[in-house]
Length: 149
Image (cartoon, rainbow, N blue to C red; front, side, top):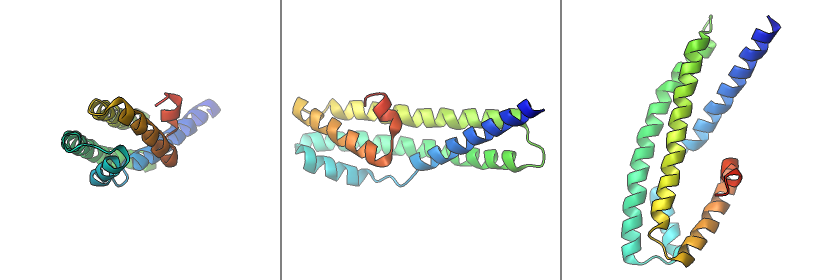
């Protein structure tokens, strides 16, 4: 009985951390601001700006769509965890679905960075990496430091 209780507590803590992480990723996103900063810091040409704007705006729309799919899952997860009887299988399924969507967001972000960097000169790409690394640290993206991004 104690093992079951410990496992349930662990799962609930894991789920809570996932929900908070999803909230952090789903915070306000302003692609126009990011584009302005890149134009200034990287001294982008008009062609580069246009290409990068298309990449970033496309990614922004995709991310928005993904984040919208997370909202009802989080609501269902909350309901499942606060029900009188917790259906562990349902909680696991919902948690997996949320984790899959968060993975989609991370992969989209990575793909977008690679597409943006492909538009830059080597010097601009180096500045971009420095800028992104600092930005990630301000946000507390520990996974970026772990993966060396």
